[in-house]
Amino acid sequence: MLPPHPGPLTAMTGLHADLGLTMVVGFVCAVPTVILAGPVYARWIAPRLAEVRPDEALVAQFTGASRSVREKSPVSVTVGAPNASSADTDVTSRSGIPTGLAITAVLVPVGLMLLRTLAETVLDETSTVGSALTFLGEPVVAMLAGLLFALGVTALGTDRTGEEVRASLTDSLKSIATILLIIGGGGAFKQVLQDSGIGDAIASAAKGAHLNVIVLGWLIALLLSLTTGSATGIIAPMVSGGGLEASLLVVAIGAGSLGLNYVNHAGFWLVKESFGMDLTQATKTQTVVQTLVSVLGLGMALLLSVFA
Image 1 (cartoon, rainbow, N blue to C red):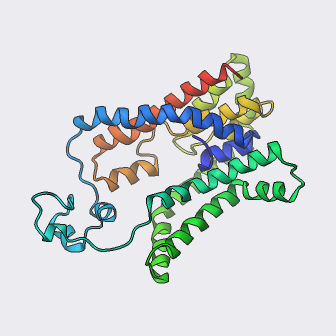
Image 2 (spheres, rainbow, N blue to C red; image 1 turned 180 degrees about the horizontal axis):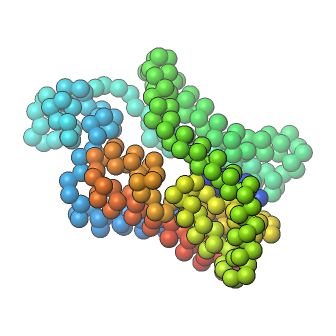
Image 3 (cartoon, rainbow, N blue to C red; image 1 turned 135 degrees about the vertical axis):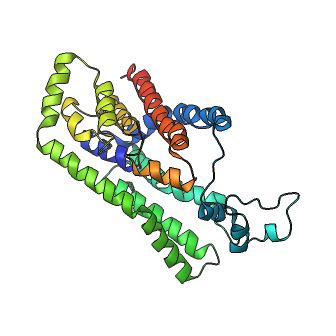
């Protein structure tokens, strides 16, 4: 629901919303949403699901189990269980990335964007430090910095060879190739909608109906979730400027684009196949969780809009 996720990042650019303010209000909206849609709902739904059988490769990736173990137990792997035999605890020795460094890699782009906001607020943008922080805080540059940091940690902080790092990067691209094609197609369709002038038409109709612009942005994003996952170009004509309203609208659009995540979404199939779920199980988890995030995100945005 907030940068540096591509959806909110695109919405923020199209609506000319302030990056720092968007991240602050997005964080405020996200925390209770994550708690309710995550562990609270998970605790309730878990006992109501039939046995879930994760993909063998996924289990092996997170447990570090060797091939011999995976062949004996293709469904699940328990490492170090009390009654496990020596064969069942055969684990491939490899050095993992320390948790702290992994979390730091994720937070690098966020930190750089926050530093940019701080520089724009406190420092002179024409100064050397201000210019450097502004450049590093550009979303694309910040994301690249996060990637380079993660790559450096992987290459230098472990005993992996250069060939192993290269293979890891290649495998990561394979896993997202289909998703990139789907996102690209959705972006092209979004441009068609923008060029058709539908944004002005919807803006005119919505103004006549006196519909809350935050609700409208969320609703359009929810409906377009079937194809694009973004309502930025359509809702932009209704926003008169930046400020809190624009930032809340970014959050609402991001939340709306997550709802109704079903068979039309690449993420739905990614979760379903990775965890070995059937359609019913995936719907009760992935679809419901994403829709909960969507509705709760809208509720939090509307609550904060009282102060706009």
